[in-house]
Image (cartoon, rainbow, N blue to C red; front, side, top):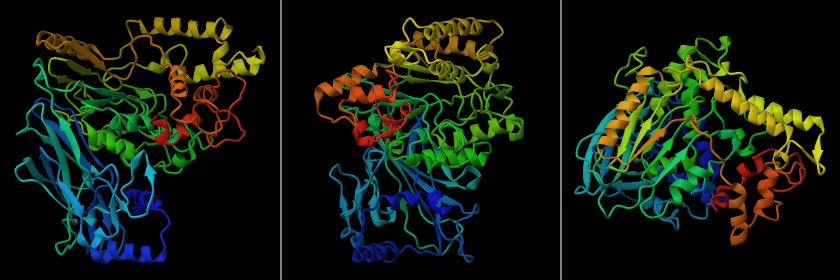
Length: 574
């Protein structure tokens, strides 16, 4: 359980084969040369750092301490009673960091700089060079003249050893800041000998005050928007691309508008046959998330993803939950994926939202009263301003006022669409030898007529006066906050929420694939001659099952999207 909790099993998986001399030397390095006492519990940073909800004068910074080592005198895995003092620092320059003398001979810095690996070892997870040595192998420090704010806080199992600080003094807009945390041994061990370790380093830049212009020298504002991150379906390529590929100035901030994870267990969406194999076995908990412990563990699983850790460290996050942070299609009175046998629905909602606020760099609710729908934990609607350029109006659309979305005439719309396509496949109807269920053959078909009728019926349903999404109070707040931003000179009012409120087109992935083929710089994946062939195979575009879902080649049924999700992150980055 400790391996799973600390993520150490994944770190070990990244080592290249080592000879016996190197193994002996490495063991000596880790357990003798560094003075790590195996008989004590100390803290480790295995889930990265994050920042979020910036204002012109404050920001939330976050990390999580993982208890590791052994509880004495029983020599058992760390238990809930361990507590830690954690020091945080915000500075205008990053901390310096270098290997300890006794570790220097075993380590080398990567070509990109800032990452250290064991000499001769290889391993890439999520597109970043995986840090294959413990933080205790390094010495570090801060330039005293650059430190803006520092402090010490305390964390316990009561909040799953997460740490969240509202840094609200000494900060200035348009200045690049760096932040990090340090931790040592559990405070319950007065004889501890473990050195303090440094967390990964994060960075942020605060925006100007609402309505105030950015300096003319400021780089362009760049925002990334994400949703619907399902662990089992494959690598998080978009996270990797966002933190690594945004050029001059990097990301200003990024928004996650819901489904930061999915609540399902190991046998549903995806099941073992649908999942990317390398991800299926690392999903925890294995069951559906229902309890506070479940939700915490699912957060912890996702935060082990290196691409997500890098994204969190690169720029502030603006977050809002959708449905799967709780259960599919929740509303004020229940949820499509909440069953009576799973216990009290309200208890489940509170557990999910508590874990959400623990594990993400969110601002704490003004009120701790759950029944306070204006200021309590459920009421996370807010406005985040970026000078005179844009105000993001973040809406809560699930548990404050929403009426039952599952009462619409089609029930679970996704499931109904899937059924309609399946029925068309089973009808045996073809055009030019290809199934009429294939997207290539939709135009003018009876299936397309059914799709259009569904759109009309759903539009009529959502226009009914007795159906709510935001509620009266939140609607009034929307009017007030948008008018305030407009009157302050803000050019754009952007509504950041999970539910589409207008029709839109999907990205033209065929055009993107054709562009890759034209450039000729990145070979097509697996068995495919071109990227366009791969895209059409993965989406069953022509209905002839001409491509394999296995990116390594071979025969088999085409599973929509599976091939693309299994592509290595380095290839997907192209």
